[in-house]
Image (cartoon, rainbow, N blue to C red):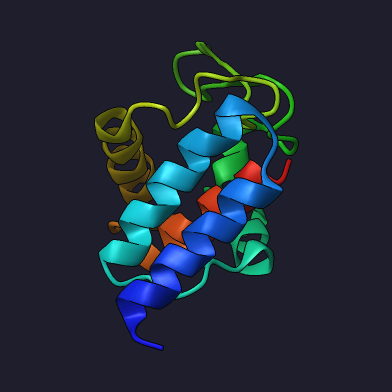
Length: 129
């Protein structure tokens, strides 16, 4: 089975196993990451990335421990809507916006850009919340 066939199969399985329109946005983004070279997304790695720390920074610093609840930016105090698509149906619908925020937040949190694999892993985990 070649990579393109595997990506298509994984995408179809994700669509079939994910309820609702919010899940289809996650599936759309995951298909993009698979096409860009990510291997099968790993929700456990995604959870570790979300909950892990880089010095004094973590995803949870602003987004909170639960992606089911709103977070708060640690510098500005601005409320950040829940990250879980099951709670916030607009999450990940706009691919450009998703990439913008991955770029900005990965640079702030990890002091580098996230790889397509890391983005796929985080997104898969968030999609299961």
